[in-house]
Length: 309
Image 1: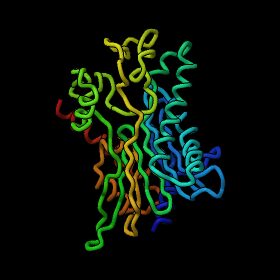
Image 2: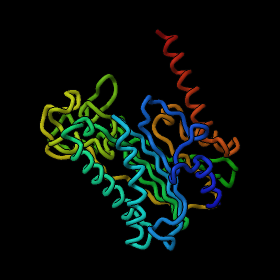
Image 3: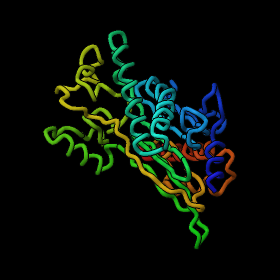
Image 4: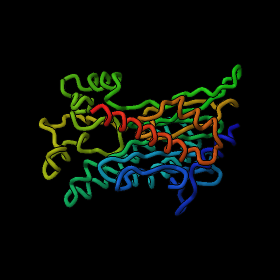
């Protein structure tokens, strides 16, 4: 069953330019005019040599403010993961956390170099959802509001149950707001309700990301950064975090597949609806089918809203 799970993951992607990225025919529909999102699947040795542990790596990088961060993650994160796996000679939570940290530090170097001529790069960031399968163990690491959902067969009934694997970091979730208040007890405006949407400092919904250094380091939250990004009060400590939430799961024979997607899908489909779509149709074309259904649901909501005006 583990091989079937890996085959399913690979079926949603195809190789291009020595990396694995989304294909427009099967894996997704891009909503932004400028491609700010990236994704990849890597299968093989997870170390820097062929003797490293074998596994599969899946990454979904939902960028915002520009494409630079998601592209950087796509180029760097897996390479860091391979390096740290080789150093420790195994996959672990610590390896994944170090790979995220190294990617964040690497992009900080990019922002620092480019800031004098391109200060707006300090407002570019990306959510980052990663899945690693190694020796029958599944690691899920997440920053932001993308989501990984497992489809698992219930032996007694034959039904497929949806199990959410990732923890999201969006200010619309009460526990995230509570966490932010706990981390910033001296800032009563750490989260603000603007236009019926909770936002961190009134400007961004997510509380964790790669990049977004205008909300992490005071030296980037000043002119000539656009005024809409600048905060009134100086940044005393990082407002956003790049520390991923990581979960570990031992895969079982009744685990069928995993759906990795950004919030654009989950805004319109519940976990169970998405799992049912994958389970009840051929695996080939699953990603395209999910996106098509989500778009149809979004259209219905727009029509309903238009009819009520």
